[in-house]
Length: 74
Image (cartoon, rainbow, N blue to C red; front, side):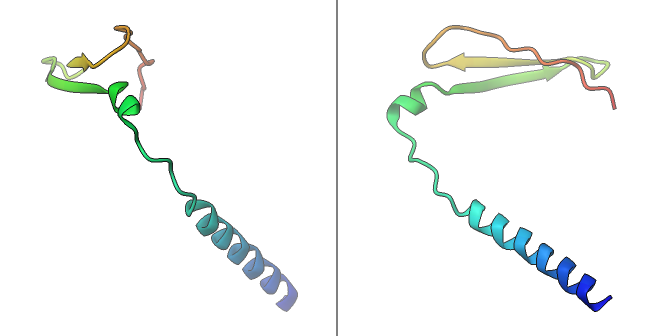
């Protein structure tokens, strides 16, 4: 039983330390060209039944592509 406890504790510590080390990766800095690709969200409204959302999207550059996601049923 003592060996099983040590094995479980060692495994948990290994997972925790590897997660901490992986989280310390640095992200690249954002450049002006990256910022130009972003979109800005404007005003929004929700339908009376609460099932629809309308959102204004302002593009800085690029095409006006609309991405639709499937409805999530809880």
